[in-house]
Image (cartoon, rainbow, N blue to C red; front, side, top):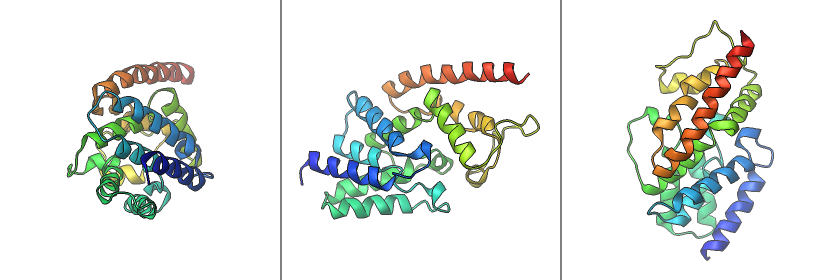
Length: 214
């Protein structure tokens, strides 16, 4: 199967699988990450097919919606790609990217890196910040019935991976525990450039938020 056909079939698979997904992790999130990844890939040395497939499949079975199972995503992606008879090396690479790209994975010691991982990770992190990131944070917070803001619950800036995975803190805390940290975790020059403006917007938003709260 040629590259355009593999990508086209992957798009259809993801659209169908995520048709009822939570709004911050639905097809349109995937579409934005895919678009960002292709943009960043233009300035990086990479295998574009691997980048596109990893971007499209990175949230095909997000562990936060599957009882914390961190292997269901790579397994689901691998099963689908193998059904297309995709190259075994590409399948393994895509699975490794999915396994290592999330923010929670950064709590563990890095055991895998590739240019393709760097690109897809940056693309995903871009969608977690800025105006889109703010919308996604509050969408997920509402989905989990979390408070928007509680001044009596302070952000935990030294949480463990398990604490991060199991937090029930107000959504505003998430800005300090993750979103505002992402700018300095970008891998690529293009990712860093795009992240700065989105980071600045979040800081402006928080200033406005606190002025209204007070």
